[in-house]
Structures are given as structure tokens and as C-alpha cells.
Amino acid sequence: MLLSKLKILFLIIVAQFLSIASTCWAQQAAGSTKPSEKPNGMITGRVVNSAGEPLSGAVVYAGSLGTSTRSQSGTVDINGDFKIDGLEAGLYRVSAGAPGYVPAPQASSTDSQSYYHIGDSVTLRLIKGGVITGTVTGPKGPLVAVGVYAIRVRDEADKPLTPSMGFHERSTDDRGVYRFYGLLPGAYLISAAKPRIGLVSPTAYDNDTPTYFPSSTRDTASEVVIHDGEETTADIQYRAEPGHAISGKVVGVGESQTQFLPSAAINLTDVRDRSSLVGTSASSNNNFSFAIYGVADGEYELSALQFLQSRDELRSPPRRVTVHGADVTGMVLTLAPLASIEGRLVFENDPKAGCGKRRETAAQETIVFGRRYEPEKKATVAAKTAQLCKHRSWRRERIFHAEEFAARFVPNRSPPACQWLVCQVDSSWSNANGRRESCKPCRCTRWN
Image (cartoon, rainbow, N blue to C red; front, side, top):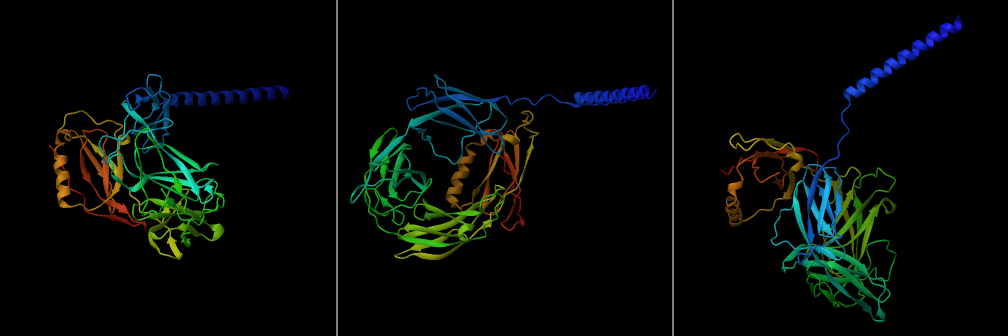
């Protein structure tokens, strides 16, 4: 009798369990959505060399801007074609690379970048990079494992680059030979000094000032000019002249949220051409003190930087340093948070346009970035205004609102298509102390 009751109770429990389970499964089936589909956006195109011939084997990258979507890549086929699929709606910067090749210089230099949407077809042109090679020798013959640096100071049109760009480093081999390849066309300064990159151990060159090609200081250095696909030899006679030291301390370093010790990077910049000369670090191991050796006489700017785990960063205001025949000590670099720019994008349809509704992906296809404001002469402003008026014909179909500004920055808006119009800018920002600031909204400007 007891056994029968237990069996009945067991069956009731099983039935209730199956009933609840079936209800849950039914609810899940009713409330479930289709598995998230893989994005099907695509960017296609071709990669060619300077002669317009297919450059098979090159790798093309599509980097998403302003989203957490990871970059995608594709390989160029034998016909020079590529296809990068699985892209979400948004804006992408597309580039190509191949060993020994560099992007071809643009026909006209502008401040705007080239951004692409899904569905676009892109033609990328790569040219054979230039080569600079040579031997570094001292009084006793070739120097081994000395650092050699190439800094691009002029572009292919002989226009000065400020700050100097294209920093490259190599080390001499056991014959004292160095070789740079894949260089953009232009003029370079080549120098030899202590190594900076990688696992650097103490060397015999640590306290020496840089020796510039052919055997001179920075003031009398000769530039090395190369063109695409060209190879040039630049031998350096090492001077082995001792330099001076700049030392000090970094304060305001943020605490580390990882197992690594908190540290800050220190950078020394030449004020003449804004080129970055040398860097070092300061950590809690040495009480955040630092020293830079082998500095030649001259005018410099010294600054410190710390990246935080939150992706924010701390920076110190640059301090001007004059080195003249002696070491410079007691420099204090104070880190502080940077000001932030916050805002909101509002898209509206122009009721007068009659060109259809706006794309739902418009926000994802719009870039808002700040550029530091530099006062311009009235003549220059007038010239730019005249230039804008020439393009009035295509600025008439849509309205684009942007609410973003910062004290000394101007907002640049890159709308999702040429039919959009910047209608209004409401100005507000947060300063370095976190205080909210605002100013009078800008007047709406229209081209009809």
C-alpha cells in the first residue's frame, strides 16, 4: 500500500516537472528570436602598382571608425581584385600593404580623410618604396649594433613636414651596415645614436649625441632625398661626442589597476621641426624619476604621458628646456586629466527636400571629430568662404544637426552623404576639472 502511494506521488512529480518544462520550452520558443545574422556588408575594389598592374598577394584592411567592430582584412587575387565581407553598416578606412610597397602620394593634399561605406568599390595604388642604406664607421672601423634613424622632413613635393614624420629605426649589423626599405618618397635626416627600440642593454653609445649624415650635428645635417623605387647610399662617420643629461620627476601618476607597476612615458621634442627625438620612462621603482642622456645643445620640449586602463590618458603640459653646455636637472612634469568633448547627434529630414527619408544607419556613418582652433587671417577665411560657395549645389537635400564643441577646438562633421547639411552647432564641453561649460549656439547656415 505504501509502495503504491509512493509510485503515485512519483508519477505526479514527474508529470508536474514535464508540464513546467514544456511550458518553459514553449515560452522560449515563442519568445526566441532568430539567431543573430552575420553582417553582410561588403567593400570591394582593386590594388594596383604605379603602372596600373594588379598587385596580387597584397593584404587589404578595412578598419571601422567609431565602433567596437573589429577590423576585417582580405587578400588580393591574381587579377588585383579584393573583397572584404561581413561588414556592419558604418564608416571604414581602407588601406593596403605589401612588403616593400607604400601608399601612393595623393594628387592633392587636403585635411579630409578618405572614408568608405559598405557597398563602395575602392581602387588602391601602391608604389615601390625607396631604400636608404649605408655604413656607420668610427675611428677603428665599422660600428656594430648602433641605432640608425630615418626621419622624413619633406614630402615628395619638397614641402616641409611639421612635425616631421616617418620615424624609422634600424641597427647596424656585424659589418656596420644598415638598410631602410619601404620608404615614402621625400627628404630624410639620417642619424646614428644609441638604440631605443626593443630590449636595449647598456651600450658604448648611451651618452653620445646623435651623429647626422654625413658626419655632423643637427644644424649642419645633409638631407637624403629618395624617389619611389630608388636606392640611395648614405654612409655616416660617427663623431662620438658626449652630450648632456636632462633629469627630473613625474608627479600625479595614476594608480595601476593591473599587476604591472604604474609608469609614465617621457618624450623629448625638438622645437625646430617638432620631431620626437628620444624617450624614456618613469615608474614607481625609481620614485617616478627619469633621466635622458646624450642630449645636444638646443631648444627642446619635455612632456609626460600615462595611458590608463579606462582608455583615458594623463598628460603634462610641455615644458621648454634649453640645453647649453651643461646638464639640466630638477624638471618636474605634472600629469593631469585632459578635457573631454561630449555631444549628441540629431538627424532630421528636410521637409522641403522631397528626397525621401533619411537612412537608418546615418548615425553609424557620421564622424564627429575636433580639430584645434587656430585663428586665421580674414583674407584666408574669405577665400575659404568663397570656396564653400562653389559647392553650394550639392548641399541642399538634408539637414544634419551636431551638438559638440570644446573651448579651443572646432567641430568637424563628416556627414554620411553629400546631401546632408550642417544646420546647427550647440556648444558645450567639459574642462580638465570636469566642470561643464557652454556658450551661445552657432547660427544655422544654409546653402539653397
